[in-house]
Image 1 (cartoon, rainbow, N blue to C red):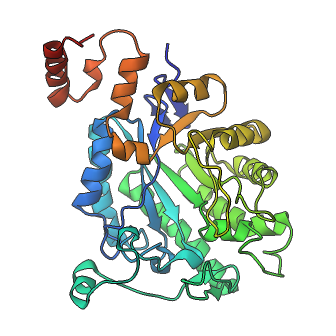
Image 2 (cartoon, helix red, strand yellow):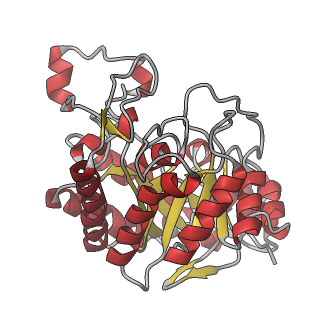
Image 3 (cartoon, rainbow, N blue to C red):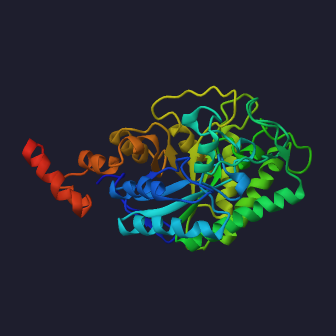
Length: 372
């Protein structure tokens, strides 16, 4: 039997297979509100056979968004449109998750495909353009193209932690099956963890223990606010790929603490700061998931240029990770699990397609002489 297409249970959530959709920013919301784009973007992955679809990073505070067009969960009005998405995912066989995030000093980023802040006045009005002051562990800018952020004081830390908790409760009200705490990619919690960004001299800076302090405070508060029967994931950058930055050993120690708090899966990515030297290539982050899985004795999700079904199967069989997360590959092929099932599972797999499509795909394959 294929390991990739075997079920797995985390607390009260059972996934029908091990292929999940990683969060992907769409930069298509207005004032943090989900809309038809998010519904169609996320819904197609349920139709394509993914077991868990995690919605993009949702800013827990208005200033926590990566860009003015990012999703939010700081206001009760943002619950209802997300609930529509959750309902559609459930109706089509997928579990629903959402990533809770704060961008820190990387807030106010331009929309990637624009290449900069070149919106006309008319576009600003139509798109809901906003700009705000960013915050961070220390008043250190991300790059020269970003403004210098305000260093968080005690009141700011409390506001941020409370924002994560309030967003967690809204995620529960929207009906999500799981949440993922975003502690990766150079965003706020990762900024606290990394010496690259954290230059504090108080109890939140310096040693690894101190640098973990605020992320773990947030993690505890979020886990306490989330129902005990629902799983919580956390995404981390296992290494900064920078000398003097976060190391694999640091992340193993962090993952141990997160597991002790009650986090069920560590989603293992990497990098997020300027100056990184990243060995990009197929499966390049899989060894990171393996290192955290073995070092912290915790379930992990592997992500990053995993494109082939046989590679995904091998990762699981070799005990390198427990889940396979796809992002850009899912964009390229929203039906990836259905296609992978054809390669890995014996017999007729057309019944795994949506009713509206399976019979037609079978007839197409019969006409081509390729049906199984």
